[in-house]
Length: 483
Image (cartoon, rainbow, N blue to C red; front, side, top):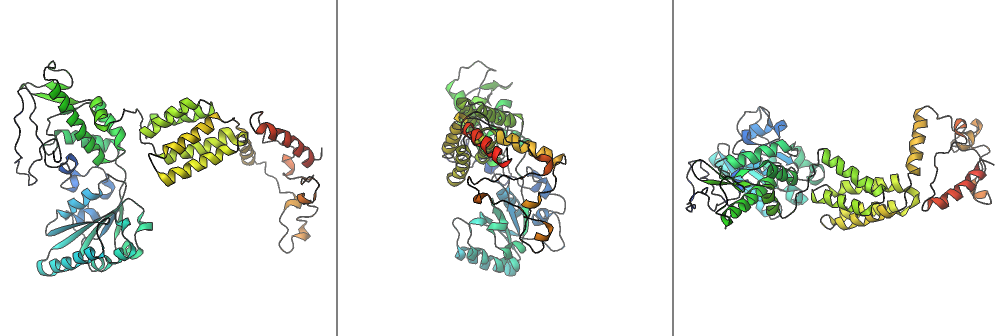
């Protein structure tokens, strides 16, 4: 098997297709294809592009570059910056379809300086002798060294080539300044759920896609949308795999009652398989996770996760951790929530909890996923089983509330900065008692403004290490306040 499960139409648009196997009676006709669904469904014009409408307005650089609109200075080299699956390669191929265009594609992973210079020499010849513009698509330009990027400068500056460079990393840090200044930086946004939903429906019906030979159930569509993470390529690849599972199941059960799942019988006697949620799960080899990263499920699951840690239910916390990870939640987001929980819900009842949470966040950054789940699980186990205290969290909230209410009097004179000339004449630092000169390292003197003398913000609980801190705090306050 090479490529897709379904036949690819002639790319010229003539309607010719490859040879078909004869379908069994009562079945939809299908055959082995030549190219993946994501390739067959690649847009052929800017009007077919999904999303990125902020870059496709009339007269925009992309429309000028694609030859659909005219600009005062002609096409400009561009750098496309965005997450995977947002259309960077697709835009490059659409641009290459312009009249009198030669399309050359290089990957920064495999191409070297010699390859770049060869393209530049050929582009200069094509421009001067044949009047043909070379569009150089350079994928993952952030992987190019400074020397390799320098080799692009003469061709871009003198317009021997129109450079279309793609990157998933911030070009301000990964692309040299001279190349940035000679190119337009266009930022691609993650595709919206509705955009990819429309793309899936179009892929099912379009002759270039599955040509109506399958149907996609609403549950399967939602599952594919949940797991694609805004990546159109991943969504189409998953759809094609799920369609393959649906066809295989239909072949295994030829006597299934007409009209029942997984196939639906049409008036002409053919049976069209229906892609169900189970087909999508089997194709992706993972269970469905009901989790919308941009909706209620996101907030509900995260809320349950934090409340389970706060409630010391380590098992429930592990469940919600697994649920978020399997749904594709950003592990860095989870790590940040753990750091907050370590201070908000545990605090000094177990001072090592914050250290563990921060270490887990660092570990996730260093090793990535899927191994990053292990330090995250360790941090969850530590936090969920640690003694709990929100004393520090309550203390800062009460202090902030007082400051916002205007209870922020002048700093006592003896605590003010006394290092600059003339400060002594103002009384700054006068009668200040240096704590290290005192027998216990604690001096009896006033620290807060006058209106806050005697105010207690931090009230440790009788759990974990705060039980000991409470005893120490009673002694410290009695000394400082001169009781």
